[in-house]
Length: 134
Image 1 (cartoon, rainbow, N blue to C red):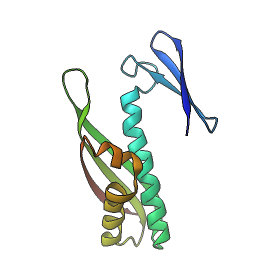
Image 2 (cartoon, helix red, strand yellow):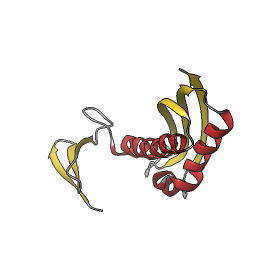
Image 3 (cartoon, rainbow, N blue to C red):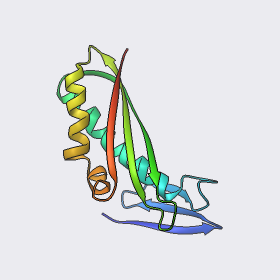
């Protein structure tokens, strides 16, 4: 896997993945685009959401929506590393089984999500979920 990031102007950068997709990054705290640290949180949310959606579909759950809300805390002093993060999943569907949703969410963060597993080496990760019936 490869990627590259190119400076555009001021603190604006464009990242390009080896698959040919581009994303704008902003080093000014998200003035024009997400900051690199915001992208880390989005990566964790995206990676774990893939696991949750595919896991629930594999278990024949009638899922119609999935959103993850991520909140994180950072050190006050440089380097401003994340110290803790919580991923809260809102899973929408028909006749969803609470135990199944709980297990799939936990498995994502504890076994399958590469981004969360990497973050978990230095960040205190926690998760929660709620089910919304469609």
